[in-house]
Length: 590
Ligand SMILES: *Cc1c(COP(=O)(O)O)cnc(C)c1O
Image (cartoon, rainbow, N blue to C red; front, side):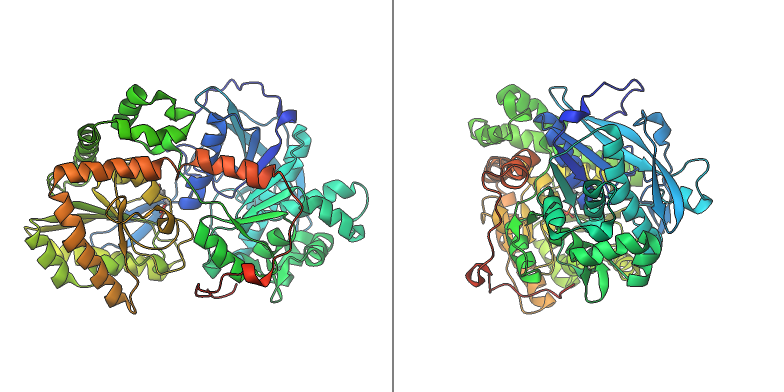
């Protein structure tokens, strides 16, 4: 994907009825404006919106110095490097707005990145930027680092996103009917809407009817049951950054929880539709937030972004309408499995050629290859696959060879995550043998994510239940005919048809138990099937036909449009006790 040219298309923004707010959006492999799954999902959502002509605009921050580039030392120690880029290469939004943060006037401008769909429809993304002459030097750095700095920095950023985003839309004459908060980071947009509604009246005069009017415009998607994923701020800090009036409005709106400002609770209180990102995640979130009705809309991926060139070529020949209508993936059953296997073989060669060029490590294309790449968070348990090295080595020898590729970044402040990378790295060095090859690839990003999900044979996921809200990398794999071997958590509960789209790793009473289940499946189910090329090719076709046709953002966006943005019946129904599912372990409350 290339950056848009300098001459912007003229767009009639007054007809855009959906405003999508996200702290991170993966817009192009060349731009460092995302950290992981949340930003990928946001980008894929907008790409599907552009392909299907949805009347959407989006708001995010410029993140001028990016998230970071990961470097790993010989010992697997992570260090981080800034990724500076110049939004000045993009057209401007043409308006600058002013925002008060802790009694300082902060000027905010925006750059426009156009997401252009397959039929030419444009979804403009406004990237807010405070690096302007005249701003306080500290404020100029406010839109530099995605998830950087301390809580003060973060709250200021969230003020820019939520309050600044609303002010910008107003200045541009955009009058959305629906505001979608992709995660709680954007929850201050509700206070911006309340102010807009009140006009010259003060926030302290807002009535329940005013708040209800805001609530009717807002949709909120929560993305994780992990407590650290829900931003909280001390009340002193809230009043310090937002000032008395806005701070009190957060309080009066229900945005405090356990004596802290809580972005999730603010979003919950002022949204008419709330959802989790997979069936089970909706249920888990319902237990976490029993006062609010929580729906589920299962995530997806943007097919044209994640499908390899070889598969795109095949599909363009056989079912060309897949680009605008992903239901056509179901028609893959009219394609000879051998052609699917041939596409995958190309992808595997491409991945290994890239690896050899970049790292000097040679992997064998005829050997069963597992992929495990994700943000390194302890609940994702990157080490589970290596829990019993002797067993793993024995399996590798018995089945005639095994290769494993790992990748993933730890947040710069996450020392436990960094230690996990170092451990996997050390194990890899120790276990490498004639039969077993393990390599940890540096700097997991969009490009590497595509290469890996397209090129390995089996995608592995080992989260601790029920903390994987959805996961989307396994969906990218499925679309490319790559089955998953995964704990039944997140999307995989919906995507796993045993021996058909992949395999479930059964629950165990301990990590050792679950590792044993993983090894059993690998040895007794995965490897024997891999040894039969025709059976494997049929499995690859099922991955595309069953899972590719459903776990895509075209389907997901249409669910948002019909269930969340413009529902047939938008009167909220109170939740009854019988609707609260009981069988799921309650995660720690935020
Ligand atoms: C798809 C993707 C993710 C999200 O995948 P999960 O399955 O949620 O871990 C994260 N990072 C990158 C670079 C990706 O491409």
